[in-house]
Image (cartoon, rainbow, N blue to C red):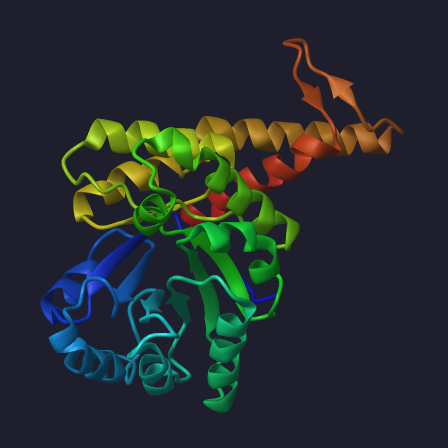
Amino acid sequence: MAETQFFRSYLYAPASKPELVEKAFNSQADCIVIDLEDAVHHDKKDEARKFVVDFLSRPAPKPFLVRINDLNGPWGVADLESISSPNLFGIRIPKVSSVETVKKASKILDSKKSNAQIHLLIESALGVVKAFELSSCDPKVAGISLGEADLRSDLRATNDEALAFSRLSILVASRAAGLKQPSQSVYANTKDLKGLEESTIHAKATGFFGRSVIHPSHIEIVNTIYTPTKDEADKAKEFLDLYDKMQASGNSVMALPNGEMIDPANIHYAKFQLNLYNSLNK
């Protein structure tokens, strides 16, 4: 399994517009996704790919992924063969629904001696059904997430509730495969900030961590929601301190005066919260 980092926000930037890529790296997004796929017109695919190759020739100021084109389409293989290099942190592969596609990507990375992580975008009903198989088929796979626009189209879904099963399927498959929590798909309405906030809070409560965004105005909201507060960090530390004392006295479960339980199950989450808070406040 690939080593993973937790990013609160992933900002897409089209590789065909270098000025927007530069702006993206100057934003507060934790990770940038340089896009060779949907955001790039087919007439500009070669030009965009050359930009990414040049970009990879120098160190980047923050982590980034490159979303390549469909590996079973006309541009995907050329994308991956061209960009695979020591400076490539990771790739985001769209429209994944077969193990063969993941293995093809892994083989190309090996041939180029690249240690890049593989992140899978599940965008079809078939991909959802095979999510665990895809998540666990290769050690380079570091994460999976949904591409909800294409998935809606494949399902003929017209409301958000129709995606609930798919979201939970991806979440369960990711965790069962030993991967980090999946990140949430983009919120398509760039002006509906209230809707973005409500949707992101719900996804966090469901078990997702982090979100892809297509507009800089979404970054602060997403980052804030996925950043533990000082009160949450203090509570997590209190839980951990009490748990250590419990263990030392031969107990493994304890009820607090407010009724909350301290046990091994919620200690895992307390550790995650505290580590995340500390890493963001170095």
